Amino acid sequence: MRNIDNWDDIQEQQPGQFDRPSPGGYIARIVNVEDREDKEYLRIEWDFTEGEYKGNNAETFNRAGFWPIALIRSYKPKALGFFKAFKTSVEASNRGYVFKNDPPSLVGKELGVVLGEEEYVKGNGEIGKRLYVYQVRSVKAIQDGNFDIPELKRLSVKQPSAPKPGERFQPVDALDDDEDLPF
Image (cartoon, rainbow, N blue to C red; front, top):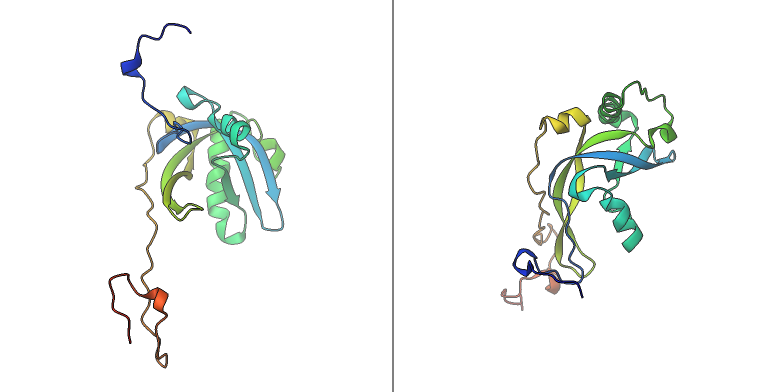
């Protein structure tokens, strides 16, 4: 074994724990685009292009079989303003590039992404945190720090609702553990 003399500088890691980016601004490159015309959106796979997370999304895909942070951009009529913001950011980040309704032409283009963090319910019922693309900006905006990092998007916890008018009983499983049974 090679000599490792900096054990105090190494943080312990358990299986299933991975170093992951924190919310903030990053420079990215589009590596795949899937046009889902039936649902009117693009599913865009991108990867970090610099820093300690360079290539992180592809590494996760190769290790775990899924793309960790995809970007979805709808082109439904109600969402065209958001799609235009994406288009403008990509064009501003790639000199001479003009998007002409040709999704495959986006592959290889750079852009800036602002990542946020949100809570979600894991398969085992626990609450976890995951990253999502909060905003797309130009590479220059990211380099200049011209973006805001969103607050953690927390899950809203639904409380059991009161019986509706005309309902006589409340389901037993809707009661809190400390609440008395209604009979």
